[in-house]
Length: 173
Image (tube, rainbow, N blue to C red):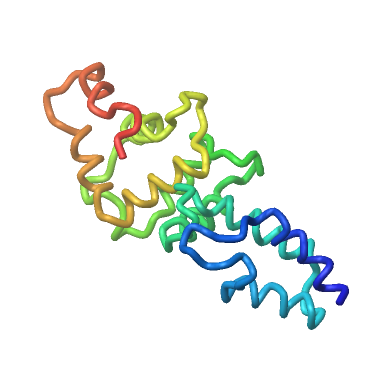
């Protein structure tokens, strides 16, 4: 009964009926799994809390679901956030982009200033860093093949540096 006391608080604040019409007395598969893991002593309530926090971090669009892109982006984010700040700065972004597999890199390559322009376009807060949510947008661009187009759009021959800088508005994706 100790495990029931530990997880009881999870259900005390719920209303009698959820949005889908089910009773709060009914458990989802995840709820059942959580209770069974605690009951069998396979994990502690603190582990469950940490997993819940991790899920919230990974759920960049706050949809209540985690996509494969969000999982990939967060795993890559953890690798390249080398200072542990919870943000990706330009040096970390550059290290990430230069380590991309060749099939994800633009065929024509890109100059340093173009990479900085791309970084700035994802830095929606204009604070010199990219948040997890902003990084997920970048990874989504990579995964749908738009990175090549993005780089090509700023490498238009004959444009001045000022004109190039105005090609990528904030929040391009």
